[in-house]
Image 1 (cartoon, one colour):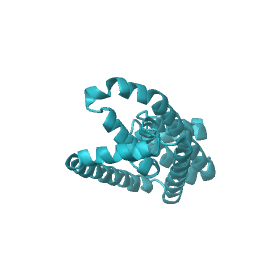
Image 2 (cartoon, one colour):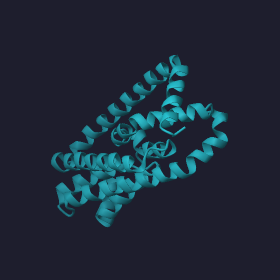
Image 3 (cartoon, helix red, strand yellow):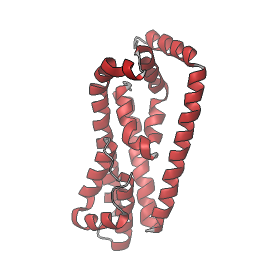
Image 4 (cartoon, one colour):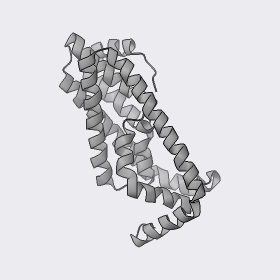
Length: 214
């Protein structure tokens, strides 16, 4: 999601530097519709063309912002999400059994969702929140969150630094492709879920109860 174009961000970088990178990435990761990835790439391009910023500092600021923002989103989801779902979940079809299924899926696949969600535009803003709502273990969340944030910041930071402004043209289609694949996966997964809903709900309930998490 982009509220500014790269030229506008470059002008802001000249004034606010690493702090801007950290702040925008953190706020996007916490769930706000801000251009975190565009800010990272623009800062990397700015570092490579002007040398007024160090690429190591850009990558560090972006990784720190990603980790910080995701942790904020995670704890908001963990503390505020369950009471809200318990009160209003039935109104949107999320009864107790379906909420337990969500917890089960995050118990099994939550690490992958958090890590790879960093590279998908929509999930980047909401994966941490969903992980918190579905009670992913905090230590497990932090590990995959930190790994995803560092790999993402390094990949896009070095790409922007090495390839310059042309990397924007690569990053855009890459982001669109990952979003398209994510949407396709959600559609296929939803259709599969609808066909096997009763079995999945029973499986989730047995698994969570056996682990004392029901």
